Image (cartoon, rainbow, N blue to C red; front, side):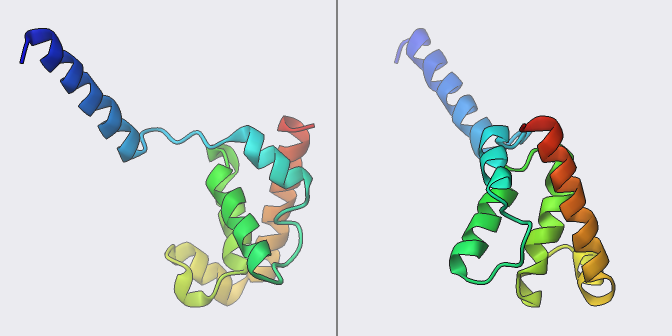
Length: 115
């Protein structure tokens, strides 16, 4: 294998490796805005489709709004599906207030970044 071929191979491994590790996830503002404008997360999830949309909203959420989106998504999840201890505490003690505040943060973010 030539030097050039090795260099290309090493660069390919580095690129794939850094993409697989996630790096700095900035979310997907365009996808987030599309879902948020459609009202995803602003009402309780009633079925599997609603849960899938919440999951998509959570995956697309930019870092600035990620905590609020996770709070709203966790409100619709079964308790055993929640991994974050803070979210478990919120779920047990102040879920309604936490969700109301998180929804307000999502609305404000959407108005500022999406409209």
